[in-house]
Image (cartoon, rainbow, N blue to C red; front, side):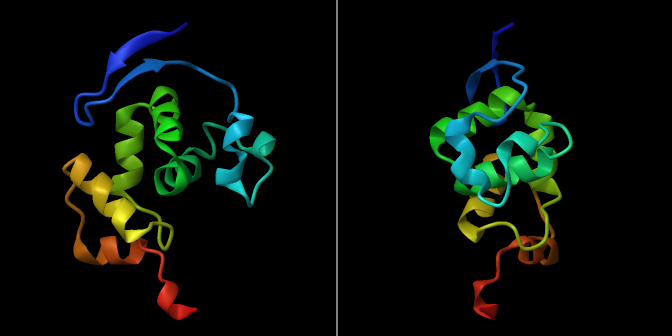
Length: 115
């Protein structure tokens, strides 16, 4: 079943769908994994971070059709250590008006200086 919903915080209008797997055209976003082995529920945090970090606008729209805004915001509010590009995390934090502590924000960023 498909129904249109409006995401109030993000302003996105999307059609909510319930797919069983990640589309093959998005395989490039998950280069470390066989996408057929990724579970949309168990691997939700990883999927959300990868798409927000690397995805196209079309990929982000798919993400908002699959996961609720609440689920996406929760991942942004508790960012995984060392997985986020600074400009990307900054964009989504501002988009959803999320206040992150400075140390949490800094730890979430990919640190390319080490390499």
